[in-house]
Image (cartoon, rainbow, N blue to C red; front, side, top):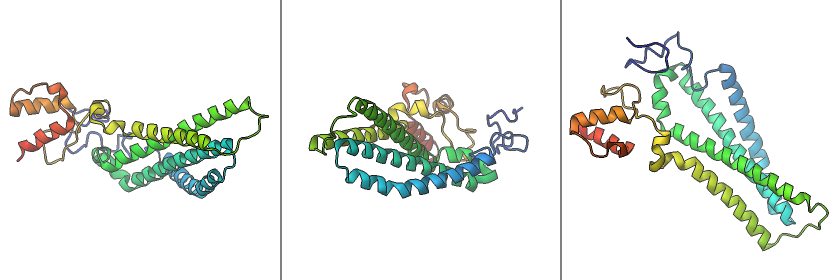
Length: 243
């Protein structure tokens, strides 16, 4: 007999998890209070950061000293990172409202959708840009404490190149970190199952590689190096079964 409300789908119609007794799968954001607060915070973050970002860029462009250029440029990066996080919070709140009470039945489609993946990248990118920029800004200010009474140096090519290198390094590292889950070599660290349409009754929920390989071996015979099978190859082999 299937267990009810154990966060493991046992029925093809999801009735063991999507019922009035289960409260854990009511939406992308479980709490209505958190959902409403998230929507308000997301809107405020987007509006306020969009309003202040042009001034931050203008301030960095008109910097007269190396210190001012570094400080203003890192503030622009923080501003931009916060904007991305604000867009994420607002968008996830909109999707939460869109799915509403039907989320439980649609959760696997949502979790395996392109929209969910893009929002994950957006959130990771925004957080990394903000955190790394704040860290760099703190280090910059700490190093300048010992030079409090030094005469500020006018903007130079050397200073501009240093600032450009730091900001580009932050952006590059943040982008690489956000895109790591999409890399094939790291897929098993982030993907634990594959979702199939309901009209393919071979699998229930989103089973892992072990379940997929057992079906493939029953159809194709023993597979060589089955542990090294990528999700893309598994999808292709499954697709060939129904041609």
